[in-house]
Amino acid sequence: MAVIEIKNVAKRFGDYQALHDINLTIEDQEFMVLLGASGCGKSTLLRIICGLETATEGEVWIGGKRVDHLPPKDRGISMVFQNYAVFPHLTVFENIGFGLRMQKLPDNEVKRRVERTAGLMHIDQLLKRYSGELSGGQRQRVAVARALAMEPDVILMDEPLSNLDALLRMEMRAELKGVLAESNTTAIYVTHDQVEAMSMADRISVMHKGEIVQAASPIEVYRNPAAEFVAGFIGNPPMNFLPAKAAGDGKWEVAGNTFDGPASGAPLKFAIRPEDMHPSDSGIKAIAKVVEPLGAHLLVTCEVDGQLFRAVLESDLTVKAGDALMLAPHRDRVRWFDPQTTLAVA
Image (cartoon, rainbow, N blue to C red; front, side):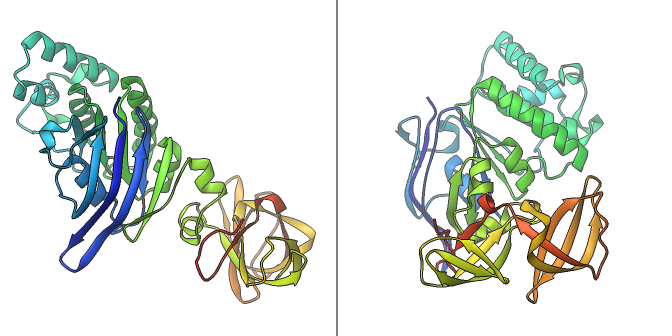
């Protein structure tokens, strides 16, 4: 069992607080993604888990054992870095088996593990080649195979696909998720790419300014963001926000329309995803400013009461800049946020 427990972890660099009281449990064989913008603390947290950084406060437990006082080699983990760290003077076989040789495993065990993980990563035909002869995607596969060959309880990955082109990233996402499921390994994956997070994770921990804002399944984070930051960060394009005024009896006035909402007297924000809008005979009055054809859909950037508002509409609609539109939301997809706390209101 490789359950990871992060308890009250904080990290300061001088006067700078990089992490604030992080509490997170990653279940055995779970694929957890730490998602956030640059500087949010996700890589710092990963480095604390693996032992490359020391927490200022808090504890790290792996498999029921406290490990934050142990060196990285004694934590039962493997790590895949952004820059691959593949040795150019070694063959693919020697690269994958490097850690196993350091553990002084017998040759037949090294051969078994190298060939098994190379097969998983579809690079078994490359074992005699040197890394300088490989493409970026092949070198990435070598780095992952080397980590898996150690048969770790936990594998940590710090933006491992960010150096690959878009098509190769898409292929590697699917491949990596399948391989990790087959290897029965607990995985923590750091990325700033929400598509990677949504497509790969069992759960996503969205980080902002050194805190975990929400930890939930991809669909829960997408449909029910816990805070404005999550709503604005997840989704491309992100959620729309409009001011809402209380109209009594749980009714709210938004851009000249009335919606059912929470029982609150304080002002709220109305939020809806662009893809949850559709043309209607009545609804929110919008003026199209920019129309972007995206194949199956149109992304229409509008103005609503002086604010930008986006809608993803069917591509067979005829819309051009300057057109007046009436847009209605799918009412069960509307979300509400408190502008003071920025948190979701049920």
